[in-house]
Length: 366
Image (cartoon, rainbow, N blue to C red; front, side, top):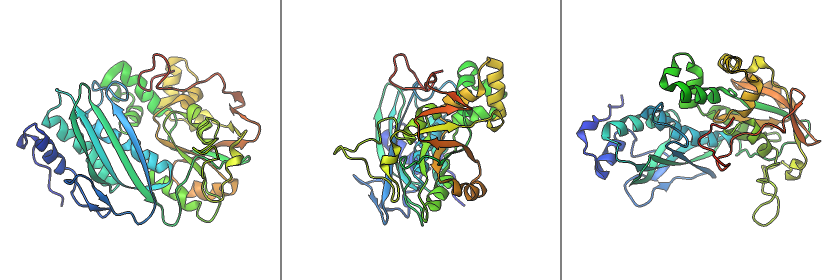
């Protein structure tokens, strides 16, 4: 039985006190570490290739203290990074944590924050290898994660879709968007009437097992194309198809390396025909859209922070993936003609959230 962490009142609010509180939540040793926290660097035990991802989690940009509990913040700050590993079909191993702490933070708050983060880290068997602490005007959280390949299997990439491939998602679409809107309007009182939507926004659950199964499914076949769905289908599907510019060339001007068996040239000129009936959407998405006079399918397509998986695969893989992966849902077909439609409607007038558009704040664009 794991002993409970010491009471936060046992620690003074100082760098050493914060580190002692953190040590009560996160073990010092881990099978993936040769040397853990306490030295200038951690030393990783890397027997296979590693994939790495980093994310910022910033007050009043990605979350508000008015409706995020400390436990919610700790969970989500790690979860959004773990979702990137899931999008590569990777098994999480560890992470580093950098915190900029403003004057209002105290040991009780930190104890709850570390508790929310440690619960997810324990669930995913991840080591906290180190990080940094600093004072800051607003709460600033930066997490870097790493993971290893599935066995058997390899990392999955966004590129490699081909005309005729099936488009799929794993997870709910648009639910976190509804959660954001109702939390902004009502604060934590929204949890009573919108429990699933609020949970999707406050405590997303990364699709790690699904990512690993998709990676294994590609071991003896053409690997699926896959990515983390964090900015909504409207923004993320062009990235999957190589239409956003990110997959068009590497630093040397040549196409970037893809998974074995994938042809990066196939991404040129791709499009998609999405089929998304309302019956696939969560009842809270449908109810919110009806109350607000909005199109529920558009809400699902625009919805950011779903932390679902978006991918494509050869059609003959669908039966086994449907049977093996909870929440797996085929939603259309990759096309050769360019352009993206949903339920036969062109989507060129819909645009998702961009952090750097004028006036943007948080993931709240309509």
